[in-house]
Each structure stands twice: as structure tokens, then as C-alpha cells.
Length: 291
Image: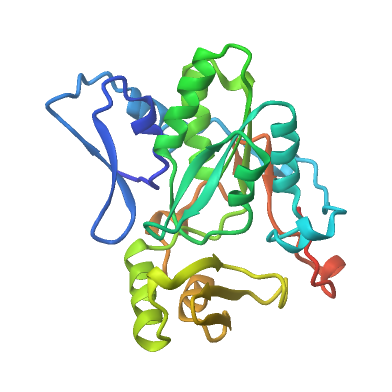
């Protein structure tokens, strides 16, 4: 059975008997409590591998854009459009849900944001699989309870495709703007932990000393990826040519097998897909542009 860990099955389960857990290879997968399961099959109905409610990107309109605010553009991975969408939503009293880095667990998880301050945590790329199930479940509770509440949700194509199916089942799709990203693939958490061990043993950077991780710092180059880690005794700055995690990630060695046959490369269940605008037009620019 194919699975990308999108969490749709755990979100739709009426008995809450599906939990998302890390398997031995370092990827999130659903675990079913068979005792509690009532075999309603909703989990199968919202799985995007079974039911893909998507559109081809061939018919999509293509734009390039960037934030005219210098700080926004400098502190985001491409042109800052995701942040601008989030900020607009907050100003309209809408919820924003996206991926943030948790420095207590050194993992990535989705969170609900209600303020300008909160969406600052969503800035930048995080090259890890995000645990989105809890946040998606909380989001459903909020918009079911508040009939006029709208939301903007960011995620990988598979996370958004799964959530799209859930929202359709719940008749809530028209209250939500879905935004997915051009996705390189999902790295293993096992190898991420090995990388943290490498930093401690080879670079002398203990996890409890780390205050900030920028997986792709545009300060040094938009085209050449740089890992930038702030810690108690200094800063760790290495390009993907020398940083082992970025190097392996760029080569695709860290991804789950489902990523290599992803059916969503040229399809999307989202309203907007975002990514870097690579190509000749901006080949000589290091400021960053959104596609």
C-alpha cells in the first residue's frame, strides 16, 4: 500500500484511532488501533493515492512575484509570496496553518497562527517531513465551530491533496485557501538525527546550544543553498557542497520511496502552488523570486 504520511486518514477518523508515528526508516506512517476501529473506510476514501481530486498544472496560469519589502524578501526562501499571503490572511482575521520548526524536539510540525508574530515561524524552507495531523484536526474543529471562519493552509502537494479530500468530505472546502509547494521530496528523520549527531561530534555543536536553523540562507546565495545554524559559541555556515545533510538532500538520497514516483509533480489539489522561479530570467539574481 502506498503512503506518503500526509495524515489525511488520521484527521478524518471519527474514532481518533489512527495515529501518525515514525517508522524504522524515519518516515511518518499511520498506525491503526484495530480495537477501536469501526471499519467506516473514511480513511481509504480520503487517501489521495485512492482518490485524487486534482488539476493539471499545464492549464495553470504562471506568474513571477516578489515582496517589495526588503526584510521580507531577505528572510524568506524565494520571493516572499507565501509570507505575504499569510500576512494578508491574518489582516482579514483568517487562520493560517503552516510548517514551523520546533526547537524542543528538533522536528517540524504544522501550527495554527492567529497573529503577525506567529506567522514569522512559518518563514523559510524546512527540509524535513512535517507532522501536520494535529494542526489539521484543530483547524477542522475551529472552522466547524465558527461558521464564518476562513483559513489559508500551506503544505506539500501530498499533504494538501489529502486535506483537500478531507475538506470535501466535511463540506468545508469553500472556506479554505490551499497552497502547496514545488516539493523536492521528504527526507528521513533517522538521517536528520544522524546529522545532528554529526554536528555535535564533528563540529562541537550540541543541540541544546542551537538557537536557530536556516535550512537555506539566501544571505549568501539564492541559487547555492547554505545551511546556517546559530548556536551558543558561534555560527555554522556551509553550502550544499560541503554540508552533508544539504548535499544528500540535493541528491535525493534522503527521500521516502513514494517521492520518486510522486503522482503530484504536475498535478495539484491546491488553489496556488508556490516555489522558486528558476531559469534564465533570474539566473543572475540572488535576491529570490517566487513562482
